[in-house]
Length: 349
Image (cartoon, rainbow, N blue to C red):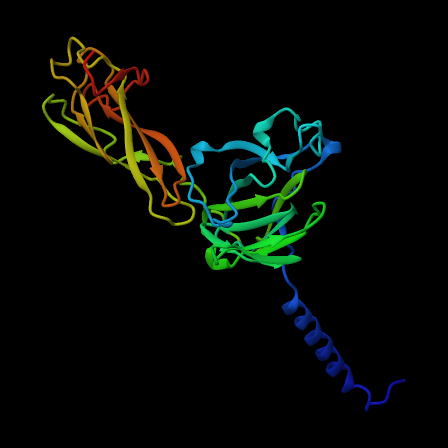
């Protein structure tokens, strides 16, 4: 049996244990998530697409400076990017044709430029770029050079600005590691650009991108499913009266403002129907608004205008939809029969 003198120590012990756990939890870091995996896998026949690449003439005097280039001149390819002399195969023969010279860069004559667009959600942090290189490599993120934190040797190029990671020998994964400052990252499209150089017969480059996404929140597109016309019914059908119709009810899950653009206006009756009058066209588009003529065929079941639109949030995410506007046959029959968007309201037919 414990004495009464023992009991006060128990809560103290639990408090210390709880404090220790909180300390450990506070010191823990989120696990890095692979955003772009290493592409090289000969035995699985793999390779990760989405890299843009081309070769440029190497200029020893010019240095390894960043290049402002037009992506239209690049080719879409995979990593690793391997190069061989004419009598040797690529590192992974089943992935690379040794006669495909467009995938080669000649040692001492050409550098390899590689770009990768990476979509990052808001809150993504601690982005890390790892590279298997053979031999020299520099990295730019959104136009700003990022210096390696783990590399055998830095080389200051003749331009006096660019620091190059250099590794002499066969390429090894994680040989060069770059930690990208959070302030360089943007929500959405981020451009990672590498420049690689080889000094021997075989060249090799493969890259991997990781990040902490534990607090990342991705932008969601607008929701067009509940959209309605600001004026669902038009009356009277006096032919000459135009009504402005806006699109309402589009919501953005993130609470972002949404821009509406009217794309088209169609109707279920001909614009020059015999009993509708001789007015034409029956609608016009003015940016976010549709202007609609108060008109319908006198012998049918009312006219339905279909207004197609696109809703866009500030991040460029979109949704599309359409809303209906009814011009009824008469006040006793306010519902319109709808035969669908058959005729272009903005033209005459």
